[in-house]
Amino acid sequence: MIADLIFDVGCNNGDDTDFYLRKGFRVVAIDADKSLCDLVSKRFAAEIRSSRCEVLFGAVAEKSGAIQTFHICDEQTDWNTCDPYFVARNEKLGVKYRNVEVPTINVADLMDSRGTPYYLKIDIEGADAIPLQNMVGRRDIPAYVSVEIAQHDLSEGLEQLRLLRRLGYTQFNFFNQGMRRHVKAPHPPLEGKFAEFDGNAVTTGLFGRELGGQWLDLQAAERRFAGIHKRHVLFRDHKLYSKDGNFGGTLISKIHNRFRRHVLGDPVTWYELHARIA
Image 1 (spheres, helix red, strand yellow):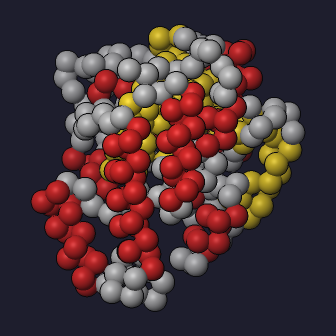
Image 2 (cartoon, rainbow, N blue to C red):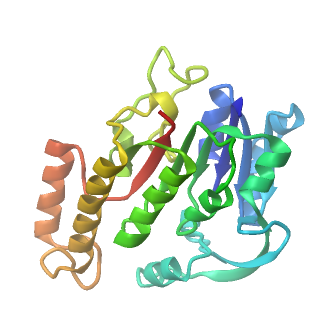
C-alpha cells in the first residue's frame, strides 16, 4: 500500500480530487464521461505535469480493455451510470440520458500498475460493488474504502457490506450526505495536510481518520443499514410520504425529515459507506 495515494473512482468534476490534492495526496482520478475527464485534466494540468495527478477515462468493469455502454445525464452529471435501474429511476424525474460506448478498467489491474492506494473512493451510481469484486483474492488492499450504499435494495446493500467483510474490512461507518454542509475538516489534520472542506462541492466527504461518526462491526452495520433501507422505502413508496411518485414529496415527509435533520442529525437521504481494517 502507498500511504500518499488515493484512487478517486467516479471523479466527476474533480471536487474530491481537488480536496485530496490540497491535503497532499497523489490522486488517480477515473471517470467514464470523456468530457468530465477533459475538464479534470484541464483543472489539474499543473498537478498532472508534476506527476501528482493522473486522469483515466473508462468505466470500471470485470475486465480491462473491453467496451461497455455508459449512460450520460448531461443535466446532472453525478447521475451518470452504467446501471439501467438508475436510468429508469432518474428519467421518471424528468432528466434524459444518452448512451455512449466507453473503454473498461479493472481496478485491481490498476493497483498492480499504479500501486495499492491508501484510500479507495468509489462513487459510480449503481456499480460501486464492481471495484470491490475486482479486489477479491488480493492480499494488499487499501486501508480505507468508501462506496455509495445501495439503500434502494436491501439484499444488494447487505451484500456490499458482506463483500467488504470478505475482503478483510472489519469496521464500517455510514456518512449521511444530507449533513455534509455541516462538516468541517479537523485542524490539526488527521490525514495529510489541513485543507478546508467545502460541503457544497460535488463531494463524497471526509475520509479515513477524519471521518468522525461511529465505526461499527458487521452485525451493527447490518442493523444500521436495515433502518436506512426501511426509511428509504417509506419515503419512496408509502402514499403518506411519497406524492405522485416523488421521493419524500408530502407535508408529513417534510415534517418527519425536518425532525430527523435538526434533532437526530440523520435525515432520510443517501449515504456513503466507509470501511476500514481495524
